[in-house]
Length: 332
Image 1 (tube, rainbow, N blue to C red):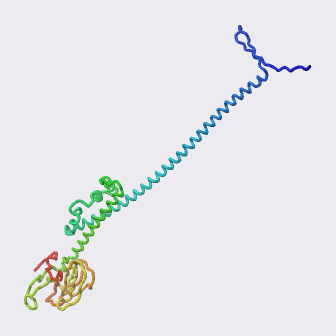
Image 2 (image 1 turned 135 degrees about the vertical axis):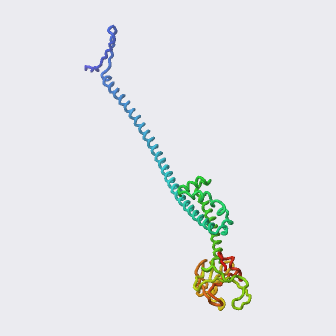
Image 3 (image 1 turned 120 degrees about the horizontal axis):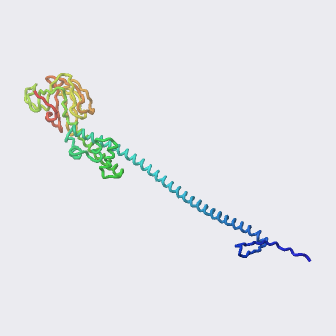
């Protein structure tokens, strides 16, 4: 008979105190072999679990980081868009500021022109009657004009922003446009009034101021009879300059046996000024003239007894006394 092979066994002795019994444990060799393996597997499993948990945590953190990065990118994109919008708005405000400053400069120029008109022509310009804010009160707009009168452009813009109740540039620009339109209209009225005044034949037509004959009835130097003298006679020397008494258009220029060399200038409102007995005519029919323009020279042509200018004003085809029109009068 064959012999059975005995399995090897391991004995573990547990010795406690000297007076106690020794305990013996028998384990098979297989158990002794598998126990370290099992422990190693357990340890390895623990490490694997920890690694898996760490990997999962890392993935979670990476996902969270990616989400936060995407959110940050979106926020950064939004902020960049806001910055770009603010830059565009700032550029628009700068452009509006430049336009407003330009309009205020134009208003200052218009105000200067109006004040020069008022200083030269007084209330006669009609500017004060059409708009009392121009002549009889402070400047037309205390916000857009007076506040900037004695400051530099930057200070004037700041003053306008502080003193005005208008906070929006568009409204302020509209206000300045309305103000400019009003001032331009008043300036046109003043210029029209000036043109009407310049058209009045009130400028002395000669260098000499000496009158030898007035307006009205007098003794005719040729017939010695009382006749009506329709103008005034201004003495002088042959060749003395003759000037236009006001703005107008040359209506007639030529020679007449009675008038001699003569010129007739048509002014506004049916007024005409006549210049007779000239030695030289320096204008042509249809020519536009301004007050003080040289039109001819004094002479002794026509029905005349000596060098002089017969100056006559006709209103609505009727002769009127020229003296009330002339600025300076000196009679002999």
